Length: 532
View 1: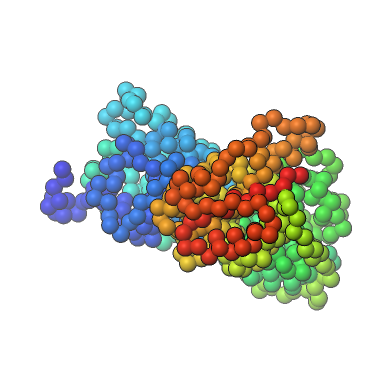
View 2: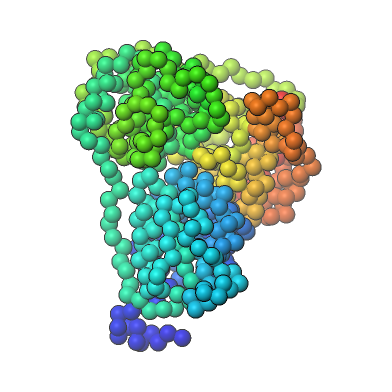
């Protein structure tokens, strides 16, 4: 046991106390985790003002912390179990990296005195395990350095482009005495050079038919309203960059053009005829599969505004201005604008769909748009229904849409739990595919235990439908391993503590969704849709 009197005399505290003092000062009061033996000493005398958010599998833990960090604009703090826990979590660590989500991930390591003997639960090369999908990774050389390592991990995670960091902590470090460490102020904003912004502003003013391609950084940096103002000033059509995790522009706006597909010939087709393209908080461009033809339409001048030096370096064409996206938008708006905006028109209104049985997922999205409040939050992971969602379920307000930017599965369901924790009082609707939901279905248990009134909508088409359709691009007549019949989602939900209801008739859909959205308990709605 540590002698507290001696601690007071020397100004020393345990590594554990120094860490929790630091977290308090950083505004962190939740630990997301799934504990193991090498983590237990961290939680001796767990501070009463902190809460431990338990997930039933480590990937679920990361997904919850990801949603919480995005919702609160502060790093999520995570505790995993040695090598096995980090291994389980890697899918959603990859997603957090692609989402640009700030996380401080810790994992237990065996005792320092045993490391040379490769003991049970030993993590060999612990700092290498999560790479390259963490911004920084460390196992401190001394126990006394653990709080400083966690501080550094926090500041790196919170420096744009945001992302996860990792600290491996031997189990016997937590009771070692060390000097407490105070939180510091670290600026996070990088402004673009005046000359580069002047050049970009002049090019925009000279453009007769500009187009913007927007990414998730706009919403992360509070740039929603400025993005709308800039588009209106120039009359620029606004396309959403392929496969991003946030919404940065009102999707009912007259200048909103839609969503770029992740194939170069399709991107060129949509950008053809424009004389200037400005990508904002997005790569130039994101591709899902090999295409054909030119990457950039002839005659199109390409500019990029991004805070990510990697995106700047890998851009296939154009001029990049490195800048915090929110500040960059303000800087452009502060400069003189064009004499008049271009006269352009976005996508056409979508005609209403009739009620038919069996009803398609498009009808589900239309109905959900009818019954939800505009400020309700959609957390989506329904890949095969993403096109219908983008057409029939417009996002209308800032910070009301979150999805996975990595292409991995298992993020959406636990992320909705984290978002609900981070935005209490807001209605959260998790829109999930039947296949993707099974990657992290354990998250329902946490939602039930915390009493979070999330509405989980499962789009049940009874197969990995996105993969089924994508197979056609490779000339496959039929994809193997894609059928998923026989899952009782309502039964699973009830077994994990949530309410559940199944819908198969179009006439019942609106009423069931309204009731589920109004519920004060977590409720799963299994929606059986027709297959195309």
